[in-house]
Length: 347
Image 1: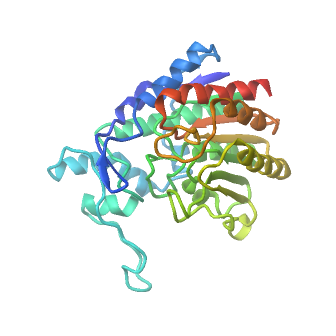
Image 2 (image 1 turned 90 degrees about the horizontal axis):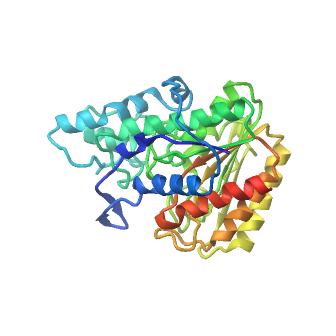
Image 3 (image 1 turned 180 degrees about the vertical axis):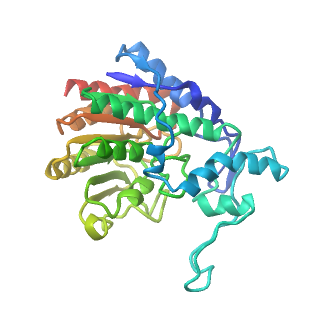
């Protein structure tokens, strides 16, 4: 299995995030990708290849142009305002703030722009953010192209992750939705039906929002119950899509403390729905923060469970693109990621 990797991810290296009411060092750090790459090489999973450059068009097929421009220009605007520390928002246009019928406008101020586009204060923007997130999208697109041209499976080792980023918002350490960009690229290259399976501990709210009113991309998310966990406001089982997309989104929220037997039942339900959809290709948002020792998560999956997860994904019998998402037990991240891929190859 090819792994697509870019060293450009190092340019996203924030200093602080707001986490549980405290300013702390970010959990999403360059070492995450490095340790996965080390394990890929140690296990001789396959060739490691550099990404190709596909430009902005595939990104703009998913994301709002104004939002993308904001990501490109944010750091420069932040520095012009006299600040050189990490850019974080501090004010948001919450529901009810504006008079009825008045559309929300983008502020001229960088602080207003940050609040307009961000969903949290835990996703710092620094000097190299755009450089890193653009490269991460190209990593996903290169994997997509390899699968579209005949590879059974490819691992796009994306960093920063992407599944919390929506059409016109960022947060949860995510800026561009790599899995969604890849899924749209599959559609644009001829696939009639695509499925995205999100196995990250946190709900893939951005992916849900992007495809919620569409029937051509089936989206499924296994995650911690949003009544208990980030992103809190989305991810409930009754969110099934809207309009023509009704029935083409599936949320499988699970309680704190979930272990493999309960997780396996949710996986089986997701696989059954993917097969019913008649998908031609599968994109997996591969988050590993379901691990029992993850510092910000509360599931109880163990190393060997990720082999089983890979086997379950393989049972879909589809060309598959794995896109790296979360996972913050850094020392174990390489083992768990590669276990999924090895389980898939053995399946």
